[in-house]
Amino acid sequence: GTRDTLAVARAIGELVLEGPLPYKVKVGISGCRMCCCESWMRDVGLAAEKKGWRFTFGGNAAGRPRIGDLVAEGLNDDEAVALIERTLNFYLKTAKYKTRSARFMERFSIEELKKHVLG
Image (cartoon, rainbow, N blue to C red; front, side, top):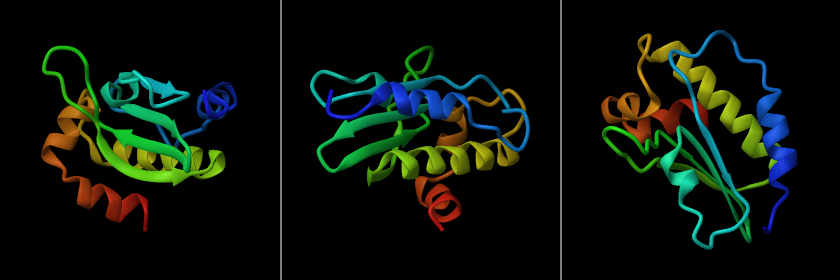
């Protein structure tokens, strides 16, 4: 891979959020762009690119599949983890109980999400 996926995965796993999430969240981290579609199909997706991490949110592979929305690109490790934290905190404050991120993003536009988390 082109980035240190294990260090970023560890940092994401150590996040302390502002409360419980509305539903389970699956994270996909790809160390390169070659044949690595899992990050697009997870609630939280990170994929390594030459210029940094690409962060997607709201993907789902089961039931009603959905490709995650592109939130930001070109992030360094710290920026990616901080943005994931802000996004998950926004999700837990805004989504109804038992709402998966994919269904949440179907009702909540990516532009609105970006407005709140990229500020």
